[in-house]
Length: 169
Image (cartoon, rainbow, N blue to C red; front, top):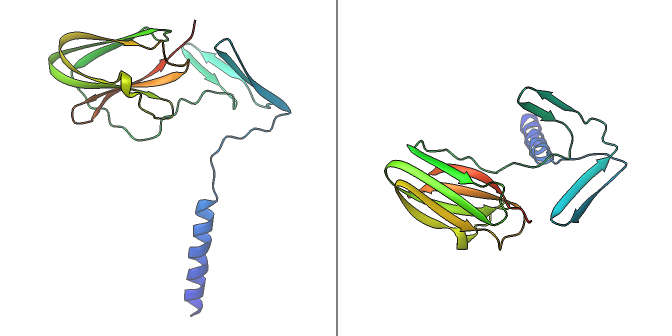
């Protein structure tokens, strides 16, 4: 009976401890703020104790909590396919061109998502790639923000994923 009671307490304690952990960003600063004007934004913190930028050759390392979040949630296996792609200009204000080339006929689904994962269905299309093909996207009606362009095959396998930055001029 004593062993059963000890086992019950351990299981209960483990359950509470496993839900109590958090990996949220936190900073203790004296002040800070966020400002937007003319399509540009500035976010700052005053009093952040550890902020340093180290540059070595082509590597750049910055520290601090005022870093951009380039995090996508999920596990994606990229399928190897003999296909070349070029997305330009990036960043862009109005038009985005996706150029695809393949030695064999490939059906590719091109989709554009906002950074919350919402699919922008009016810009999505299926393209049959046989040689070289270009797809043009009019982004002038989208807000200035970061978007995710995804290339996948007809089975839904991920071929490539690219961050697109939409600017306003």
